[in-house]
Length: 562
Image (cartoon, rainbow, N blue to C red; front, top):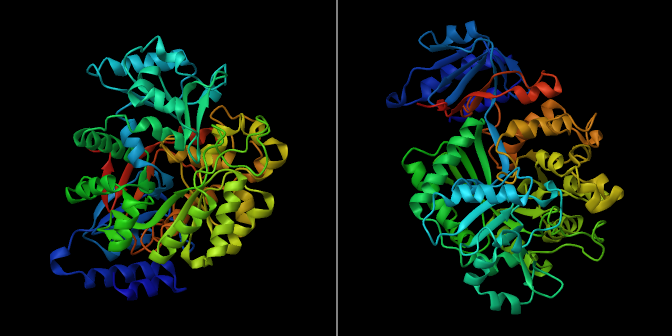
């Protein structure tokens, strides 16, 4: 895009005049072979997320980008040949960007048993039997999504709970947060039960044992590797099928961009292949993982692969999750004296990893749930001499000591947070950390008021894919039944504009993409979503009734499709 339109856009001129002039300049600068017929989307309520024209009625799109916004007649006068699309009063918002999610995991989850929402072990067994009906003998039963906090008995399950149902077929089930795994005895036998029995807890992991010292089948964080290595991998054909399902699901919920929180080489090569074949329907900002994928991309310095894949950051794990008591805390868990959680990466190893990433010029994005993990993140970033314009990130920033909250703004650390974590955890989170520490938990408002910046996401498939659920949670801090009345610690709620910014403009900023994504402004990609209702004005409970009607990426409709 030529620089002159950008300069004009940033001026203080009347927005309508600027938009029309932009259209003329952009069209004049396009090569003849790239000429196309513009499209005018009119008669809508369009929330642009632009400071200059926050709400307009029409949008002019050409060659995948926004040419102008404003009133329909002015835009039509500037482009009389435009094809016209009547929005019929529908609401349009920028394409939604999930700033922390796991497309790779969503794809594999769509190949396994979905255990989210299960209320008992018996219900889990039923879902596993349904999956088993489609498997050949000898295959493992895999699943994800169980959460013992939703059961009548909130104790961790054991292998014996499912051995009777599956005495010979190996079962390997991932907790909803991805930080605990549950195996049956058949799986332990294949993984080497005697070796596991005689193994010490690995650094950053826990083998849960019964009173006699026998492994129960529960493995926390880094201990999961003792069994996962025995699980046969999916075929490439299966993984492609899973990715196709994940892409369709994201488009259905208005997601046009995802910040992938941990991508290995195989996944990134699969994404590239989908891009080459023109079947990748999101823009992926990928965080590599320490090891081969980081080394490869750091050495090759790949930033963009077309306009659909960007690789310029690395994801690191500091601790586990609150639900499985693996989050690292400064003091004991309130409901488990003597337990302060786990550091999955030692402070020294973390310091080395951060230094390597900085030397490569990469953005550092670190997973930190507990207040000890969050303090280690901030201390290490500060000691490394990070600069605010480097936009390093705190992935989750979930339980933060009150004195550490303002350090995010001082260091320029972006808090990448997930609103639905608060409304999923609110039933038991205070039991874990007590009434004092909960004041710094899921503290979106405190981060903003201290001068920090938020990028919002879902962490799917830990949470549901639908970002409108995150919008609702951010604004109300309530569940779908409007509980609790007034919201859970409502002083930490966001305004609707703040919540939408977190999923659009500020998410784009967190990925260094604010010049091309995040708002509906001239020169940016035409990524937008048409909604069935107005999330910016609907009463609280009615926000949940709003659904995605259409999703557009680069001026092309990707949902619904024939």
